[in-house]
Image 1 (tube, rainbow, N blue to C red):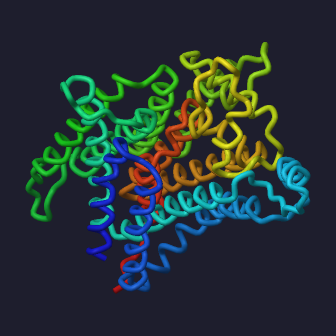
Image 2: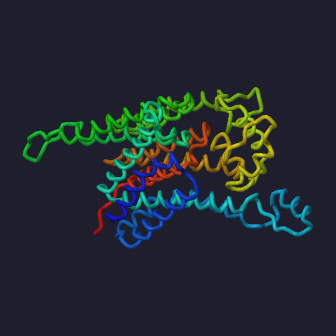
Image 3: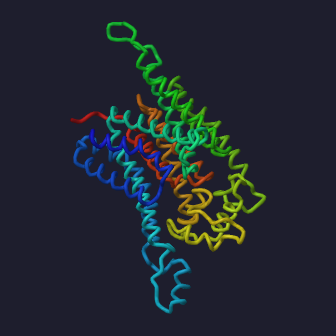
Length: 432
């Protein structure tokens, strides 16, 4: 598995380059690398590791299969719940056209391929991380990747003639995850070396290894925090802070052995914050919750997304079809619409339908709770599951703030982070 580990580490470290250039070619190259790594994994993964991997990944695999199955249904030309545009096209051409839910089947197939790429990276990361030593490699590779993304943002702000990143939106997601990853490395150093340990003959163990981990982790936190302060909005700051608070709460409960009562105590502030967030929803105007928490920096994009969310069928218009229908909803003086809606949540609501969006939200919340529970039950290495839960929470909140979730760099980093947390959510006995 060392070869697979090296491939995954290399893929993570070069993923921030997608901030400069992202598109179908990049997705195709990443898919080819992931396919090669999965083939090598099938050959080199030991039987004991395979059995353990299936046991920890099964719930997430079932949840991940639901959106993929729905996109396939959108592509198939059933004709029963087909979008009305197919009927109009058939009448205009005077020929029968088999309709489907999706307006653009090619775009839906491409979107399905991008989603399967993220699922493959999640599974690949989990397969590598079932071993504790390989899991550390993935953790530090994630830290390097997010630091590179942060340096790209900082360089653009302060270095003359620095190349212009074309995807600042997904940079926000990458750096938000980087803050959580760097904080996880600090937690790891404190848990492993913060308490005075003793050797078998009674002499105190040196804390130098802990400092060697703590100082780079602190430097990574400063780099990611500095970059985040340059581009994050108030809403993005709230999302990152909420995820970081979740990680800190889990670490506090374990550090001071507070048990389930302590977990409930630190959960109360989070619940109160969530209630206040819901209470701040503007009920005085008919605004969808998928765009309600955006600032007014781009009112035309928000208005277009709102109109499309209101008119979208229950079954959606098809994955990847937003760019095909958006010009119809554009006002005369509006700038050309982008390839996605104002937020990832609005985009999912339009393309997959409102029921599927909230089903995804419910499944995400369930996985977060599972990871947090696993973190409290682990004897050591609990920070991996806590990190994945915190990152998943942050990404979920950011989905209602911007559309950076659909970036290739964000997807690769987040998928590897989730796979790492799933693989280390339960301890195992090593089978040779």
